[in-house]
Image (cartoon, rainbow, N blue to C red; front, top):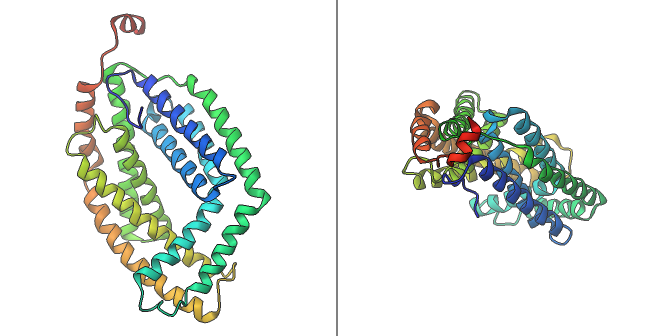
Length: 312
């Protein structure tokens, strides 16, 4: 089985299957989090993002169910965000050191990194993490029980419209976020663009057998943009933390260098991300999904005769 909708099978069953598989994998990662919190929680959050992307894809068919479940898994991911953010900040320091080897050759960023590692360790060892894992596990287990209440249209034409609507909605979000990022350039604009790009990438996986070709090059470009936007997000989070002064990160000299390198990295990443996003999302969302709707109508399997009779 895979994170991909099989057009030969009814849409309801396929979406239920994928939801159950992804939530089940999230639960397995939560179970492993006590011994390997950093890796397990990161993988769990990725599975929850897959779940939320699928819910967005079929939202137009059952807005109440999809909105409720999406909020549920958003809350679950929020419970686990602290440890992941701590790890991301350490990775940001490592990327800065690799990108600017001359400026950081004296290990000026080492003291900052040591403080971030200590903070990460505190989060992993604290009682709050155990409680968060317990709450996340309970929420996912309840979510598994609710999957069977989801019913989607299985007639090919209606199912095709649902999938096209979901893909188009995400492309609209990406286009709107791109326009704001170009005109304002604020952190929230790039964060919204990142979320839309990640969701679109997951939709490409889900619709791999239905999305008009060529898809491989687009998927590669979307993944690359998502990585770049992720690095930019981490840089902006680090800058906000540094500017707020709410956590000691090192001596004034250490923080001065850190601030300088963060600004340089931010400038480069923003320029790169805007260029790549324009290539991907500069076209009309309606035009981009018109072929998808036609291809999905052709490719989705017709209902068996007894099911068609029951539906009518």
